[in-house]
Every structure is written in C-alpha cells, then in structure tokens.
Image 1 (spheres, helix red, strand yellow):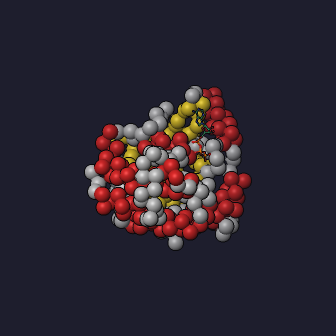
Image 2: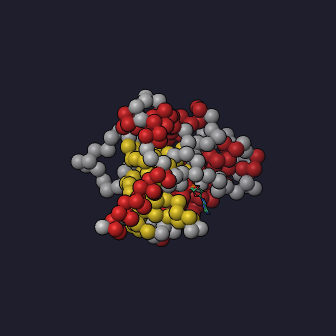
Image 3: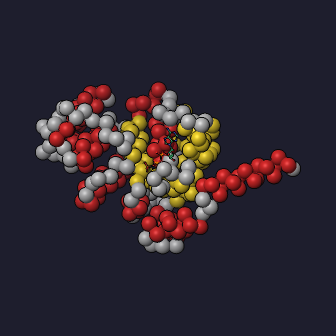
Length: 265
Ligand SMILES: Nc1ncnc2c1ncn2[C@@H]1O[C@H](COP(=O)(O)OP(=O)(O)OP(=O)(O)O)[C@@H](O)[C@H]1O
C-alpha cells in the first residue's frame, strides 16, 4: 500500500532539483528536470532504457557534473564532500571484489564506515545471503553477486540510498524480500531512490518519478499513475501516459517554438 506524504509534518525533501540539465559529451541527456525526493520514503525512478535514470542517479550522488540548474541533496549541493558518508550508491555493475569472500567484502565496506563485524553479518543476512558468508564472490550466481554489492551499500546505514536496478536478475521471492527490506528502511527514516524497469515494483513505492528521453513525464503516487494512465495495471498505465504525453523530441520542439516566439515578441 502506498502512502501519501503528509505535508503537515513532512521533513524537507532529501533531494531537490530545479531545472536540472545534464550534458554527456555535448549531448543534452537530462533536459531541465524539476522534482523532489521526499525524506524517509521510497521513491521509484522509472523509465525505458536510455531515458536517463542512471545519469540522474549519478548526478544526485555527485559523480556527474551538472550543466545548469540546481541540485540539493540532504541540504548540501550535490557532490559536496560532507555528503559522502550520508549516501549509499549501488551501481548497475556490482562493486564487489571477486577474489575475496562475501563476508570479507561486506566487512571491508563496514570498516570504511566505522561499522562493526556484527553489522556486516546483519547486512549479509538482510540481502538473503546467510550461508554464503565464506563463499568467494567469484563463485556466486549473478543475482547473488549483485546482492553482495547491495549488502556493501546497506552496511554503512546511509541516510540516502540510491539503488540502480537492485532487483535485476532476482527471482520473485527475493524481489519481494528486498522490497520489504526497503520498506523497513524507509519506516526507520532512510530515504530510498530506486530505479527499475519492472512496473509491478512501482506499486511498492510512495512516490514515482517517470522519465522518458531525459524529460520528466511526472512525479506522482502509484494511485495517481493508475488514474492518469487509466489502468489498474501499472505497466498499462505507464504506457497510457507515454502515449498521451508528447515525446521528448516533441517537448524539445515545443520549447524551441516557445522561446523563438518569446524572442520575436
Ligand atoms: N558517455 C556518454 N556520452 C553520450 N551519451 C551518453 C553517454 N552515456 C550515456 N549516454 C546516453 O544518455 C542517455 C541516458 O542514459 P542512461 O544510462 O542514464 O539511461 P538509463 O535510463 O539508465 O538506461 P538503462 O535503463 O538502459 O540503464 C542514453 O540515451 C545514453 O545513450
């Protein structure tokens, strides 16, 4: 069940973007995004392949330079050194040492964050890898390998967790387990931004950012997505919104026409 943030007692957003524009090798990839990520909630970042999800996450965690606009993360400018211990980032490519064991990987990241050995074990359990502690990471399946990466991200207990497709390659039972873990983390005050291709997972989020071609189609709750997309099925609802929205190119053309008009006036 999704929860609508209560504005009366809501803390300030964990992330705020205003007209955020990102270029990669002179190509504009994110076209002036304005949105916020509520604190202590699970926000889903959804969009087709190539829509800009990873680029946006990289900007938020401070490893992608922004061309213009503002991006504020936990009250600091994105990329500020003070944010480093506060953000956990799991990339699509697992950041794991394959020649050491599962537990040693997680212990290593635990030590970087001043966390105990017990906390390293807890993180391994949290991602469903109990029993695999002594296994060399190289000898794990793809899904297990990426869960080691997730454990390494969780073990620092960051305030903001940015997870790039953390459930890819996982079976449905594990997916449900992980989403329950995400919910528990949010209930305990952690802010999560989670990207996914799987629309069913959108129903587990409090807030959704819908991206297409580097444009934000909307920020809405799963219920609002169903309503706007005119379907109870989130996949269909998303397709409905895409079909009724102008494509990225059309939006850019409309903006160009508007600024040309302004210039002529
Ligand atoms: N170094 C680069 N130079 C130019 N364009 C790039 C570069 N890296 C990525 N892009 C383009 O930027 C756009 C956004 O890519 P991004 O990886 O952020 O999308 P995504 O939504 O995360 O995709 P996926 O779901 O497939 O991971 C894509 O069109 C991609 O081709």
